[in-house]
Image (cartoon, rainbow, N blue to C red):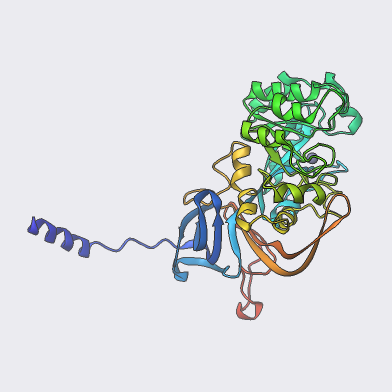
Length: 408
Ligand SMILES: [Zn+2]
């Protein structure tokens, strides 16, 4: 036994030390908040070839080709915005994904029904396939998608089989079915969307306006299935609170059934007078999302970090806010491999600053909430590449670089 052990030791001494991998990118000293893995501590993250290679304390700076000191910041999984509207080819209400997602730390954004089952393929080839952001989609139950409110009222344009067919054809991109803006007092839009989701084994996201005989309570207790999402949960048109501003029993009951409640801020759907009392009573959103479009980014500044800041200001903890912007949305859209930091997983990472000072946030009703903190994205890594760096954290001072030629 002794001899064998001695032999092994000799062998180990004689063997060359394994070559240390030099990582392409090393984020050092950041406060990592990764709710899925219950990380809430200072850790280094090493990245190479689009993947996270190592998450640990004290990875030597010598092991990184590009070392970024992020010790003043929080480091989180790339944010996931499950309610956005993107379209780079002329839709007057839509925005370019990369310009609006990546600079706010969003590495995965889900277009919520801008395109329908007839127009999805054009949307995919014109927009999704050209984006650096991972753009996924809820496909609209209306064939033409959101091409004007009048076009979204005809049940004849809502075909569950056709919507399911396109969802099944592109399972890597389509996460579910969207219905929105439907005015007639019937269940056609919701029930056809649910049918399409059943046929394609996906989920539904509903934008809902109650009508006589078509109530919100029935929507969330009877028509939606566990895993389906009501977006605009703190909007003005659905009755979440009673006259005393108490969250109604059926909200809790629906949550118990597994119905999910999404923020979907948008131009008209976040009201502090509804959201603040609900949050105070513990009715937090399951997912934080922007409903970003050309109008909502203006007065109410409905970007991801702004919406997160608003919920931080309404009393949620930073960890709760990050959980609802990373792993919760990943699970909601059945992409559980996203929304966390994993060795061997894709390197989608957000570096966030929580600034202190005097800040003001505007809601959909043009009212103001003042706060002492604001969340801002300073650096975004998508698929291992730095795609946003507002403070120049990943580059050297020009005076130290000689005749630099880093332009790509
Ligand atoms: Zn929307």
